[in-house]
Image (cartoon, rainbow, N blue to C red; front, side, top):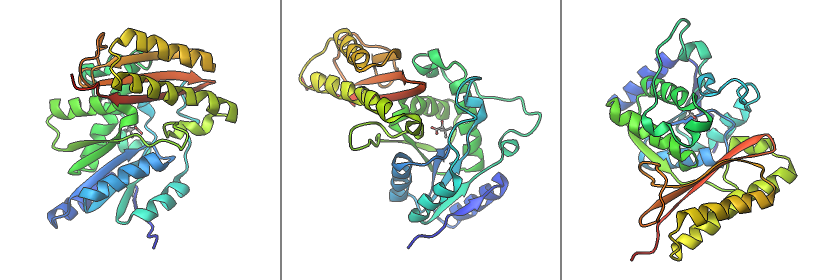
Length: 288
Ligand code: PAF
């Protein structure tokens, strides 16, 4: 039976209730989101429920991670639908804070994201990860959970948060959960709803080309440059004009590799129409 989640607007109240739940012996999981929930987010809630007694979902479109000209104002806000989806996952608490509650007027302190934020997304969205690190640290303060669950689709974001937690001694376990895809392979994203039917077809070339490259690596191809060029060509011939990056990189350092000798992550960011999409795949070459 569906049970509406308990909704908090006051971060201080949420924190004291979480502390009480932990004092009562409950393990608490945290799923930070910007709302517009889809099955990818719900898979994080389901993963949290496997190991936690209570899951806290935060819904907050964080202004500081959007640069001027990005989609902050048009980012989908679908609170009623989000709460309805979460009502299938009892027990869930939801924090929906006002901007002033997360950024008290006059506040000037921010987190400088770790070095791992610099390549890839950092090249194209220079302020993005400082904003993400700042809000995620604040969310860890107001929702002092035992574990936090993030999706692999934002691979670099997970690495940024892992490094921040290590560097700033934040006592929370970071769990990376697999990408959830549509039946046709498109990685689920709140931004997919911006795509027209024609653009959606074009967007499929991203997961298709990642998949093909992964298969070639699994079959023994080890030349990263050739694979990179092949992915770029497939994207271009599908009609994608603006490719921010295609990178075959070490999953730990995110530095590009030349020869694939161990696990590799292939990351793509590209614009389909005006919608910027990211996707990635983690691949292991055959054992030598
Ligand atoms: O991945 C997201 O939705 C956001 O970057 C996050 C982690 C909720 C921070 O605003």
